[in-house]
Length: 192
Image 1: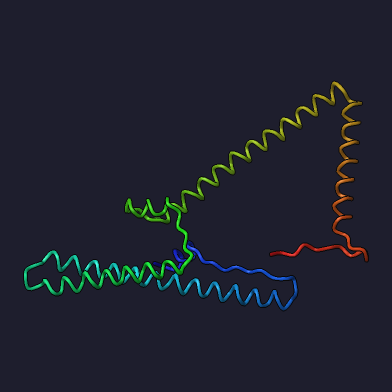
Image 2: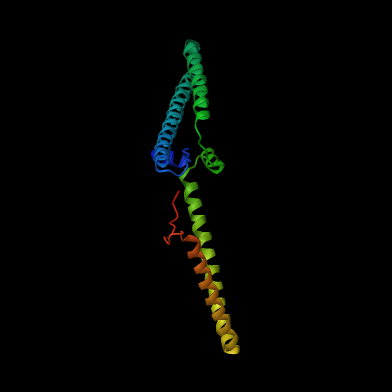
């Protein structure tokens, strides 16, 4: 498993905090340590999978050339596989790795899991283009309706534009008032 796959497969780092600078520093350290711990667990699972695949290959070679003399090595390899599978299950229980079922199905079908990512991105792009087309169509409809209304009802359209400008100014004023502190400074949103 390469590093690009391990980043896709996940990690679990949580952070909380009470808003103090010391707590935020500790949260960042905890989050980094949690990410490092998660990556270490992921690497252990990956190594266990690689070892299991090697054991399965050895078992295949032993079975394909089996005769009575190879019975003891066959039993040893089967026991080794069982021990490694048990180890893999224990490592997986400690890890928080979530893989979409579509990816698992692609792997079962012998396909590259990167195809799933490519398909999801292409689907998002297509949906984005459709939505943009709808938005542009609605903007053009609004523009056309305002032009037609202005030709037929110029006074009402002017009143509409004035009331809309006043409402927009009021909303802007309210937004600024909510972000102002009692001393006149402006509150800045913190990014989490």
